[in-house]
Image 1 (cartoon, rainbow, N blue to C red):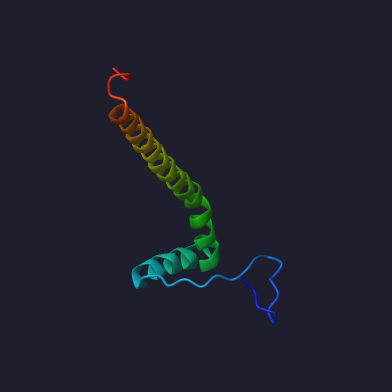
Image 2: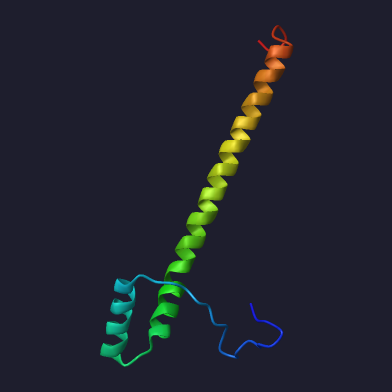
Length: 89
């Protein structure tokens, strides 16, 4: 998020993230061997993996919603049965 003194750069915004030293070493080695930047490889990794993370997130939300809906429907059914046991048989 940019502040009132800082305007977004045309190529994107800066995001700061802490990474373990071993990951940084691997990214730096790859960047050095290929003559490309660390940032390029971080952007490529995020771009490649983000769709899977989003899919996993929505699948988990959907599963929780479906389970909650099933639990809620079952509870309602049981409450109706307990209120009028003879008419629900």
